Amino acid sequence: MTSISIFVLISTVLLMILPGFVITQNCQAPQSLNYSEAIIDVLGGLSQGAEKLINTTVWPGDATEPGFIFPELSDGPFGIPALQKKANIGIGVSGGGLRAVFLGLGYLRGMHMLGLLNKARYLGGASGGSFVVALTSYTDPMKLSKNLGNYVPPHLLTPEQITASIGGKGTFMYELSQMDPTFYQRYLEIFARPDNYYVASKTHPQRESGFARVLAMAAFNNIKAGGKGNSKMPLGQFNSTVTSLGTRGKIHKKIKEAAKMLGLEVYVTDSTQVPFPLILSNIYDPTVANFEFTPLEFTPLYSGVPLGLNGTSPYYGQGLVEPLGFNGQVVAHPDGPAQAEDTITVKSLFIQPLVGKLASSGSLLAVVLNGFIDASRGVGVNNSIASLSEYYQIYNLYDYTSKRFPIADGGYTDNEGLIAMLRRKVSKILIFYSIASSSTDKAVWSANNSGLSQPFGLCQNCYTNLTPSIADDVINNISKVFNQSEKFDDLFNTYHKNLCAGKVNTWRSKLQVVENKFLGVPGGWEVDLLVVMNAPIKDWEDKLPPATKELLKKSRDDPSYLAQAATDPLSTHALVGFPLFDILVFNYKPEAAGALGSIATWSVLELNKTMSDFMQSP
Image: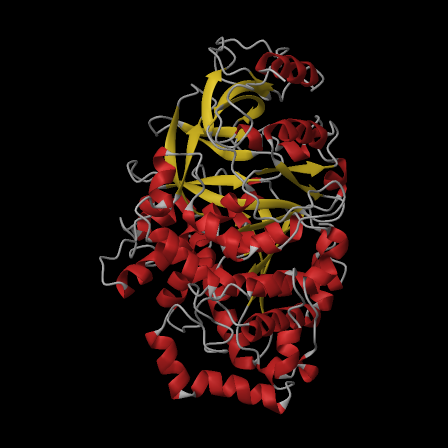
């Protein structure tokens, strides 16, 4: 078939796609777009490497301004009625490397066992927490019980049962506990190459980054999506995009038609079965004082920056865009700024896959991990965020200018999805927080658990070790959404009180939300916040079989274990530090994964009444 006949065939098919999301010819486009045109660039090809022009729906605005409505909550075609009927409750899963992943999966397993997970409207997370969100949201909801592994109560949790509890091949905990030795081997292979993938991503946007590539090879290529209307392919596919079932306008059908012509897999989430997923990252711009980090959201229906920042040059943010239109340059747009819901034409540089979004959300792991690798190889340590990030072309909906920015870890401004849900004025928020340190020194505790201290504007020495370092007053000014320092004192004291008592560690409070333009958080309202935090729990450990107690004791106290862990920071050694493992370790042993998941699930089941009461409609 000739190029001309292919052109006519695909053009005819595309005319059937609804206006508002089409792929257009790669040619000089008019400034005022004729939205009825529907032509695809077949000469450039349909692969990720080809340059594409895409008509895409955009939503300009600032979440702090009255009248701003997120698309999934609207009455329009992108609104999801089933989601809107749910109680205004959200669940957040914090970052913290694979420690957070296995704890988070264990916590959500408990919520699922209690029948409470799907009562939430939103499920948000950053960094390691984003892995949990993606795994829960974009796989078959009918297989969620199997994929979350087997819960074993503590009195039956022998060392053999700890390992068995993670499930079998293809399940979440199993695959993420099998990354050793392939993860570090592949990571080193990629970063030792002269055409470093991170560097290449600055100038060759079609190429995937090293961190995303390794995540796919080491784990996500072994976990399949599946479920109603979903791809049957593994979650690590680079030629992929996302969408959601249940919208009034059946948006998923349009996305699937466009994706098919682009050669993309489509990962689908279903808000009738699971909460609506929010994966968080940040735009990093060290050149603008006090604006180093700007929140960036990835959802099934849109990506973008739901706030307005007029102090940056060029402007960036001011709205949301469908996933296929993200990461590009605007080539045609309405006269003047985009309105409440509009359509523009974008030259797409590279359609970001789901695994790329996870790599962006968890990029701090790559930054700090690379420092360890550099040190072990005897070369200068480089903790530069800008040199070890994904790079996205970010445009705004005010004057349509764009610039390539490094994308930083979501944890810098929203380590647990709290801020994203405050943007949406979610009334009750349950946070599962992966505590990194149980220090009784408040300054140390606040630095190591910055996702809890930053919302109060009380983080100390949180990011002074990065290049360039970030002063406390800058990050706290950007981060504050609660103006009640005494509440943070109570959180800190409650954690240590529960730790000493050997109980499940929780803290609940009603907090007044203050407006934060940096984060797009509207103020003047109250949120009911419940935080569940990991810690050694004597009540759980007392119930363990003798052999498991001995394993824990040896892992924590044996000098040879501790010495080996200190000299080899890139490896785990059984249960050293349980349950406060090093954030950087990517080759958790199966027993470590199983133990973290088990203590987390048990904690939720112990809180059955508390959880059931909290998940009731506000």
